[in-house]
Length: 448
Ligand code: TRP
Image 1 (cartoon, protein in one colour):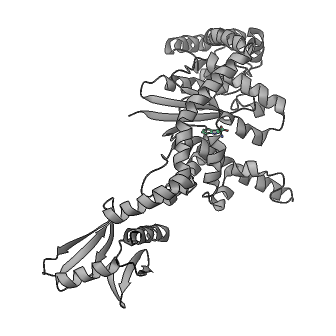
Image 2: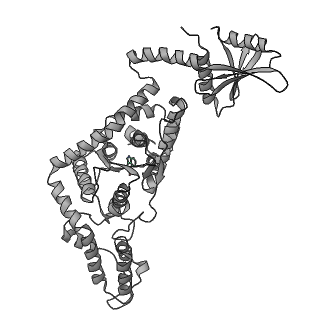
């Protein structure tokens, strides 16, 4: 089976080495698998939530696009696009907004953190909170559900958002799927091995700590950054402890096992930190040198990048456009022309194919079931002494008079002349029960 992998990159910054090792490199490796269909995109609508500097947004979109291509993403195999080139995504966002529980979004970590901070500072809880921030998880759910992704590689901070996408997708399926799974429910995947790269100061490499190593700066910038890596004060010749050195951890993320073993031996043997930094520089320069050249060539040709991304968007929309049409249908946004016809034929079909099936119990009594077109049992009758009285009831149920269906817990009963003549099954909740009652009414609706 083909697995659909999807992930987005918020376009607010310039990719650094941590992004490369933690997200870009593993995603590109995964996209080469023959059994994988990958969707990677620039989450530029999400960027607007965090950043109101148009120049920065534009620059970041260009840099991130060039980075993925320079690192070897094959856009013939993977689908690579900008979120903002897919109008189906904001449209789906609205459909999902209408089923997403506000209480669910109240629990989102990012929103809660803002509220907590406001409360701590004695401000209005929602001070500075935009609807964009609040609805962030719904937009992200639309990104994921639009393409029916199975797996979503993300950082730990995003797991909750993927779970919300599952929740929202499930609710939509339940309300509008009519027994079908309209949306695939996604799963978050965390790459355990590559999860975090230490920065210059040993904390997680992150723009917000200002401890990053640029991915595609010049060789000089790379060298300068490496020179700033914090080490202990052991002198040249003194043995170094590789396991307490984040310089070593950085080396490890890019070396072969043989290279790593050699480096380790050298450190234990007293290699000077300056030399060790030179080794790391060589390693990174070897891994990134060619990609760096490709990157700068791509940045010089923004019109070509535009073409590549527009082609990616066209490819993504081959899936998104027909699927969104199906979703519009599902919620009732249908053309009047096709709607009139399909309501007609739909009803006739349901009426024609819903059917009563009579049978006898071991004790000789008679019963019937009402089965929907798809075989779902909508009703099981009480027992009757003879086939004639059973048949009489099935006739009465189809004569077009108003049906007396009463909810009983998470089931329902069908009443006739003051007694229960049939019973529904047990449902998970009252919503599921009501949906089944609706199907029962449709099955028994008179034909025109
Ligand atoms: N919110 C993600 C982040 O900041 C980016 C993102 C947007 C995303 N849409 C997505 C990731 C869909 C995975 C799937 O990292």
